[in-house]
Image (cartoon, rainbow, N blue to C red; front, side):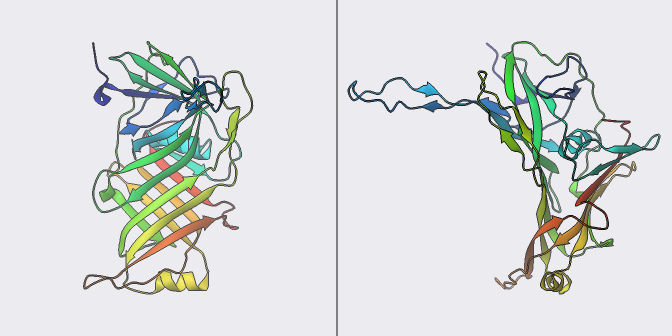
Length: 312
């Protein structure tokens, strides 16, 4: 009997036309590093008395289908996740193509995601998948990945794939070496690490249904937050925090092939941090920043993706 191995697993993704209804075709194989996306249904212990010390049988509670996907920041595949996070992009150019994603959309697309373990075989199709949170960390070295927090309507398990023939993408993976951080259009020096989190703060619509699924997940007030850790070399960021003035922060990656990814937070506010001296080594300061809607740009964030993909 074959045993499931992560090395043989696969991930297929497609956008839905109708929430909760996976399309029959149009799935794309996407790279991923790990997945906790799954459905679970806990048991509720019986509280009934009168039958001795041994408990009566438990009953099933509500079904929850959600989890995280860890994926590479790849010039091709990241567009699927950006569309799920921000909505339909504006695409220009005739190759390379420039995809511009903007925060603030009230209407976000749903996805159908199938995780497959062919040796069991087990193919789990998750319908009505919405992206709740996207986050990644910038640092000097290591593998560059992002975490996608997902909320699904439900799970359907089959011994055969329901995704049909999969389209494949040519990978063009970004690395930490390709990253840069800018403040108000100028490179920000002395950055040790940075963390970026965009959240749609989805509201699960948990109505009473015979199938135990949710009715949907609606976006509420979005949030763009993060953390910057810098070597303390000047008072520029500290003074901005004291003044309470916003700045723009830009987190960018670029490949020699002219493919790039840039997230711009248009109005970032910094808290006043502790400046601690913890030993003889260099002094560092950590800023837990928050972004807000910029009245000039008319939005909180813009993500620009340049690649060879015509559309998502």
